[in-house]
Image 1 (cartoon, one colour):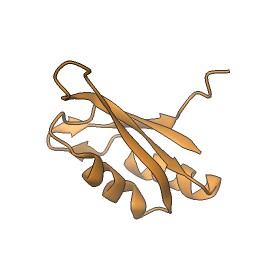
Image 2: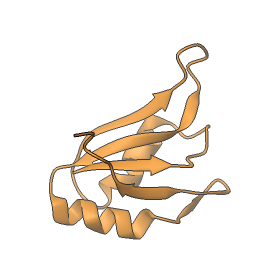
Image 3: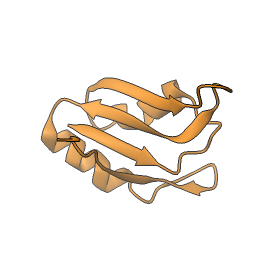
Image 4: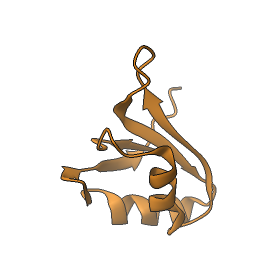
Length: 81
């Protein structure tokens, strides 16, 4: 299941984001969305967890969690179809 994470601190690394979700299950992919010109984080990213049950637990556990003063928003990513 692909998960969208918003309101991330712009200083958070991709490795730190992956680490945050690995507690809940095997992370298949982790991507921070970066600005093309500055390569700085845009404050959101995506994580993919193979098992739907583990992904749902991660969403529930991490939605609203405060990281470096930012309350992150975590939800299932839209499939875009």
